[in-house]
Length: 453
Image 1 (cartoon, helix red, strand yellow):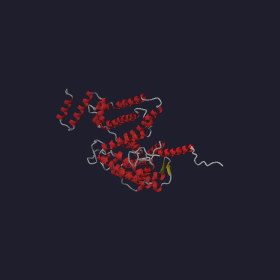
Image 2 (image 1 turned 180 degrees about the vertical axis):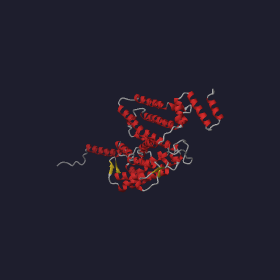
Image 3 (image 1 turned 90 degrees about the vertical axis):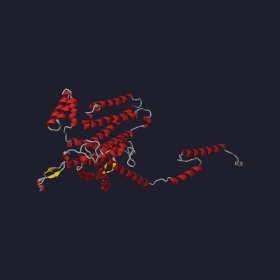
Image 4 (image 1 turned 45 degrees about the vertical axis):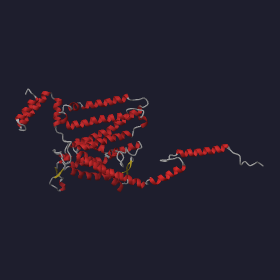
C-alpha cells in the first residue's frame, strides 16, 4: 500500500498559483479606478464607496431636464442679443454675421481634419485661415466699394486700394496658391489636396453666401431680418405641425421630418410673413438702404421708399362686384415668394448639412452654443435663404438709379484731370444759376481748384 503524500510539495503547482494570483492582480491594476488614491483593495473600495454619494449617476430624465434648461437659457440669450444688435444699428448686425461666418468656417474645416497627419505637416491650418482672410478681404472690399464709393474714391489714401482692389485680392490669392503647391510633401498629397478642396468648398458654401447676406443689410434691414425670421418661423411650425399630425416621412436624411409638417409649416410661414411684412414696412429704419452706419432704431434713417412699399391700386375682376380699386403694397405679393422659398427650398440646406454630418458620423458641427451644438447647425438654412433674398431683390425689386458714387467713379476712371475740372466748372455754374450757391462761393471754389481760372 502506498504511503501518504501529505507532506510532498509540488513546486510547479505553487508556482502556477502564484502566477494566477499575479495575473489577477495585474488584471485588476489594468482596470482604471478614477480618483483612487491607492491600489490597496480596502482603500480603493472605500474611496469608490465614498465617491458614489458625491457624484451619483444622472438618470435619463435628469439629463434631458438639464439639457432642456441649458438649451432654453441659451435660446433666450441668443434672441435677446440678436434684437439688441438689430435695434442698435447695422454695424452690430454686420459684426454678428462676420462672427458667424468665421465660426462656421472653423467648424466645417474641423470635421475633415486628421490630427495625426497635421502634426507632420506645417502650415496646414495656417493656409486654411489665409484663404479665409483673403476671401473676406475681397468680398468685404467689394461691398464697401459698391455702397460707399462716394467716400472711398475721394480719399487720397483709399483711392488706390479701391481702384485696384480686385487685382490686389487676386495677387493675395495667388500667393496662397503658390505657397500651397510649394508645401506639398511626398506621402501626403491626397490629404493636402483634400484639405485644399475642402477649404474652397467651405469658402463657397459659407463665406460667399454670407457675403450676400451682408449686402442685404446694406440694401435695408428688412431684406436681412425678414428672410431670417421666415426660416426660424418655418422651423418652429414644422416641428409643431409634425408632432401634431405628422405621419408620412419626408426624407431619409432626417427621419423625424414629415410631409404633413412640411406643408403645414409652409401655410403658417406664409401667414406669418404677411403680417410681419405689414409691420416692418411702417418703419424707415427697416426699409431704407444704409447711408449712415451709425444709425439705430432711435435715430432712424431717411429715404424715398422703394415703390414696393408704396400702396398701389389694383382693380378686382368684375365678377367680384367690387368697382373701387383696392390699394395693396406690392411687397405683399413678393412675400409669397420669400415664404415659399423659406418653406420648400431652404430646408434642403438643413438636409444637406444632415447628410454631411452623417458622412463624418458626427452629431453636431461643434459645441459653440451650449445645448444647441455648433453655429453651423443653426445657420445651415440661413445662408441659402440670404443668397436667395439677394438674388430675388436685385432681379425683381431693386430700383437702379445713378448714385453720387457712380458719377464720381465714372469721372475718376474715365476722364482726365482737365475734363474733371470742366465737370466741376459746369456743375458750379449750374448750381449758381439754380440759386443753390452764391456767386462768390462758386467762383472761389473754382479758383481754388484751378488757379488759372
